[in-house]
Amino acid sequence: MIIAESKNFGIEVKKRLLDIGMKQSELAEKIGVSESYISEVLNGKRDAIDTRKKILSVIGEKTEK
Image 1 (cartoon, rainbow, N blue to C red):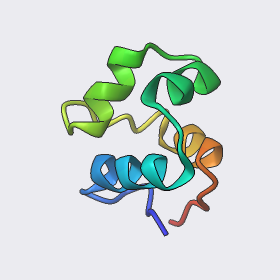
Image 2 (tube, rainbow, N blue to C red):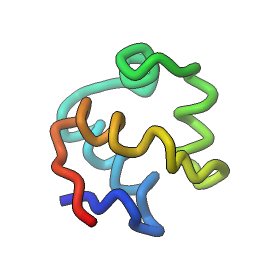
Image 3 (spheres, helix red, strand yellow):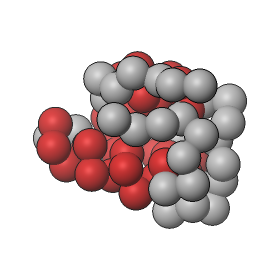
C-alpha cells in the first residue's frame, strides 16, 4: 500500500504503474495534469501534495493518514 505522505511516493507510484500496465501519460490524462508534471512527481522533483490522492485513486490504492 502506498501512503500518500510517503517520502518514496514517486518510486512507489512508478512500481504500481508497472504492475497495472499504465503509462505516465495515461495517468496524467486521467487526473487532468501534464505528462511532465507526472514525470516530476515520480522523479521526486515535485511533492504533488494537491494531487497525491487523485493519483492514488486512479492507480487503485487507498490513502492513509
